[in-house]
Image: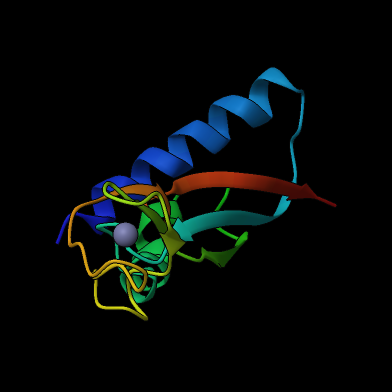
Length: 113
Ligand SMILES: [Zn+2]
């Protein structure tokens, strides 16, 4: 489980962003996680209290937004949802594709009071 170290990295980044913007109070951190990212949102959420424990961000909330996965077929350029179609292009049945969205793991927003 690598979520804890990822969440701690997020917390460090939020800390740095807040400090460089003279923000001293943060209400909510909004993350965007892709549907086919290697991180599991439930684990991220579960790790969060431990990651902020003892820091000035310990009272902040974490909100996670999911980003739908989409891929482009290498054969016919059809764009489709790889989860819905199990990774097989619905137009030509090709299994080779390039990921367009769905692997994100980003800080979308830092909500201040
Ligand atoms: Zn195709």
